[in-house]
Length: 175
Image (cartoon, rainbow, N blue to C red; front, side, top):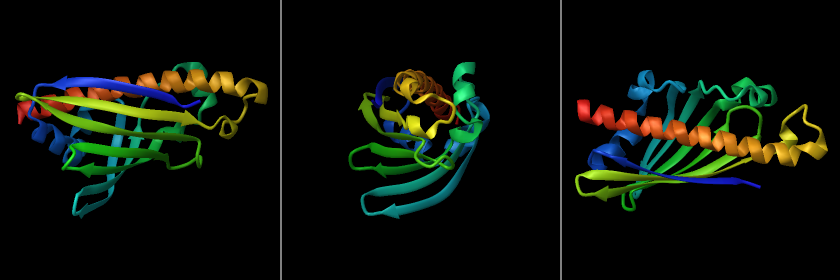
């Protein structure tokens, strides 16, 4: 069963600045993001109602040892397919692993809300892992293990998203 997660993060920066930094400058923030090795912009396309961006993320997340034994080490490199809708201030995204076809699915959205001179970032996503794509787990055990792995990974992702938000905030404050 997919694991759903929502986080609300308050940032001391204007919505326009937060929006533009997330959309256009994340590659500049990589040195200050310990869980990210590299972000490559693969494609960027403007359209009438927003911008479509395809980024390739290479993560350096260290999961607990039992999970590291189950998941391939390079499964944390993925394509981030995002649509940035400026009218609604929502970024819809899906993450697709570059290897291990359909090992997992992560779909969600980031909503940027103005709060005076600040921004409230609402992050919501659903993560599901296909237990049949993970070798070495007996069939009868897969469903129980996968739900726990989805929860652990989702919380780790949420923690890293919060750290990224803080780096975005610092980037804006210090520019």
